[in-house]
Amino acid sequence: MTQANMKEPEVDVQPSDHFLVLLDVPFRYESGVVVGTSAARPALCAAGTEVIRPSLLLAMLDYMSGEVTGRPAGPTVDVRLQMLRPTSPYGRLDLVVRPLRIGGRIVVSEGVVTDASGQEIARAVTTFMNMDSSTSLSSVPSPMVEATFDEMIPARVRDERTLELVPGGRLTNGRAIGTVQGGVQSLLAELCAQHAFGEGAPMVAIDIDVRFLSALREWPMVARAERLPDDRGAVRCRVAITDATGERLATHVALTMVPA
Image 1 (cartoon, rainbow, N blue to C red):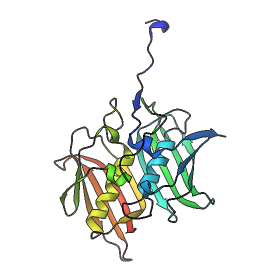
Image 2: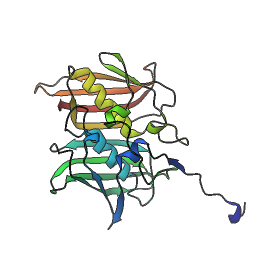
Image 3: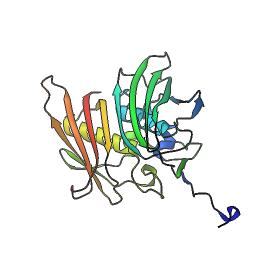
Image 4: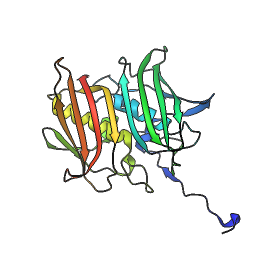
């Protein structure tokens, strides 16, 4: 095949109402790091509160980490976010991601979120595959229909510790990949932990450790929470995200939860 006949890889552009597009994190490159800004707003909060969902900060940093090589790359292997302090859902969020290691197969990056006053509110370390991504985002988000991102996740209750989700196209990684977006899975895990241990009250995570193990392309996906022993009284738990049978483990999420 001649160079003139060679085609560029098809890029799957996410729609303007996609989960990642609505997070609205424009970024730029500065001296080898990725610098982004997003508006702190009530839509980012746990429903009924003014506490921003840490899983959404994780989603923002995960997305930016995939750009730290100078081109879209992925998929994510694992990501851990730790909250340092709560933040107001008003003002501005500043995000910076810098590479810790760029290897031939694996990239490790560290991300920091600060508020408008410059105080750090969260840190995350992300590992992802150094492979070209075929997905890009629409540049302009459409108006968000839902009041919060919680409402974007149409999870159904299976039992007192389990939620199940049939994701639409707004929540996946695009036609070429077909899997559920990692930030969506993190939010689903946080919602599942809240459902299992919140006793009807909103909760948020202060520590989220996500391991992406295998892909699911058949629905529903099922999230099931299990509380772990902790002598200090904290709500520490694991959420396993599996296929409908529970036999195929796709994602393992360890969380520490607190009242919102």
